[in-house]
Image (cartoon, rainbow, N blue to C red; front, side):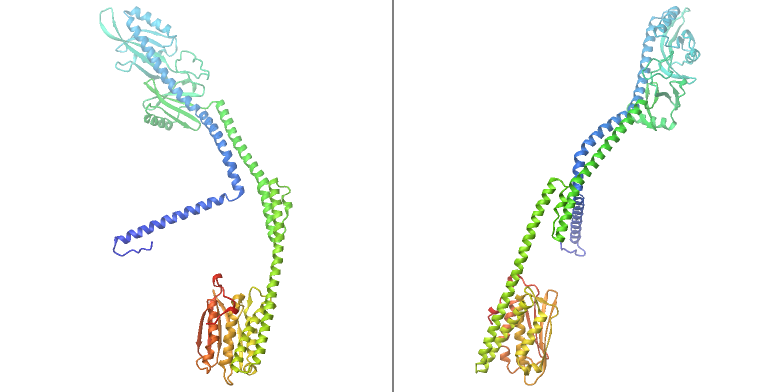
Length: 617
């Protein structure tokens, strides 16, 4: 867009914005083309294309197998994390189940108790039915006084009895509490009992069971003793998390190291963000799970990998490494085979072709160890090269024969022109009229000029181009000799054509122009005893050739034979200049100066005609 911005107008600003947008779009298109070209150059060789095809065919299968193996590896690596999540769920389910079962049992007992004796019997029956699960079954009033109790022989009786006495009304029906680092589950239900003194008071049935356990085997045998905690595998550890950040181990005798406070804080933060209040975390090969337990407390489970899982993961890693190693080995083998079977024979064939270009001999033996297709290609190329050599020899012979014939033609033309010049000279010598004899001599000089041109083409072998310096030098001597001894003694000729070479079709009109101008100068420029110099120069400037013919004679205007000088000779000069699309300029300054300038390369449509067919205008 060639629009300009007009100062003080908004339209000019819009034009500038449009121009800027077009330039930006053009730069982007140019950048895309450069990127596409560079990307295409990456696949320009046979090696790159073979590698692309091989990788493209093998890579999908390898990727699919690797993805499947990696999925198995990922699932196996998360197995410990899933076990920790399952353990949290099991602890939650266990606490809820025990609390609900104990509550249901206590509600049943509360409906059947009518007096102290029945209360004692029902407590004994409940303890027996539970398999000695509870460390304390008792009836307690709202002041914490134990009315009836039934305990086990466990050493935790004092802790259980103390927990019962610390009862406060209005608390939760089920709760978890800790004594000396051991967790307990307490369940209580209201029990209306009427005493013997007829005083009515609010009593409660209370059941306390321990939650601590020792580590159990992965097969899941029941824990020993009277522990009723949920079962954990040997690679799992669990802690109850109470408000305030207190951690209580489910196995106080196992010596488990509690997780770091930072880990506990991160788990609680993630649990607060989760809808179900659960969270998982992996730290240095340890897997942690966090979640609520029975609606009474939170629990944290730590799990590690089992030995068999570690072995399996190592096996999967080794399998992935083997798959990759086999893939790389297969690709390397295919690339080596491709190089040996395709690229190396192709390279040797290319070198043989290049050697044929240099020496003209094609060595077909380079394909003897190559595959059959390359041998056929080498054989076909060898046959083609032999035919090309024969054809080249035939063409060379034909060209030499053509040059010989063309030289012979120039030789015969030269002889014929020489004969014509001799006939004109004999005929002119027999004419008595001086004016007619002069015209015959002029025609003879023109024929001799053409004879000299053809002699140069034949003798010097310049059939396609003519050295103008040597030709003009000989032509000037010939013209000066033809002018007579008197003119020859008074006029000096200078020729300087440098190294200008010219085609014969252009050299013919130039030779006639030089002949006419020099002949006129010898005839009219130096009358009487006047001495002088005639200069002929030719030079190439860029795409043009400039011919300058000058003399220091009297000039055209001062010549007594002005009409003769502007007669057929000058008309012939102008006509010959038009044939080669030349510009002719005549100057009269201290003599006469002819300047002819024409294109160095003439198109085929404007090739000059033969000088012999020129009709003067």
